[in-house]
Length: 304
Image (cartoon, rainbow, N blue to C red; front, side, top):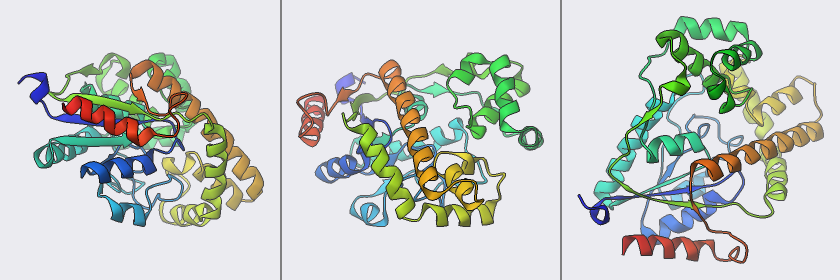
């Protein structure tokens, strides 16, 4: 199959709070596309406010896929997510010849668009229980010793990915970082990016809005259903809301900590996108006012 006849995958990426959701909806409406979410937390049910998941109104405007795949106490690994994403992409290619990925989870985007093949190691329930009992700080220290390359790509408080890397190491005897090959899929890929100059202010506004929209109540409900041991409740926003509920932080302190952690995370995301991808930046200097126009023009050019 010649490159020009291959189906197209569009990947809209960017750090958290960069405006991906709003722009994605505009692009999807203009081209009759579904939005295929590539977000490592939005794929879990009930985690709506804290992950800034598209609202019910937004999801009614255009179809969104790859959201709400699992309960928060049922972790999904990269291989499993790729299988779900590949099925959604295939369905969109049959329907429109174009699949539209949107998200800020760089590793997940790379796995899909570049055909990363993570090791097929099934979950090890007993090992995971042992690692949970050991605690995230100890587990991460173990990972830094055993597989520093993998540890360098995983946040220190990301228990899910830390456990998975250790799980692969113990099951195969080889570090995860040495087992991730690639098998590029037969698609054309167009990468689009958002990186607004006022990102820090946008993150501060987003963080405050999460608490105003009910993050603390959502966290209380998740804690009641899944318990303090649920690793996803130690992620940005939920950890601070949990500390507020325990009386360890005031609301203002929780908002400040959420803002700071989000800004740090966004910095790591931007570094990843700069090193691992080559998107067309839609809001480059002088182009901030017309990202939709630039996106549609780039897509039209690729489609010929």
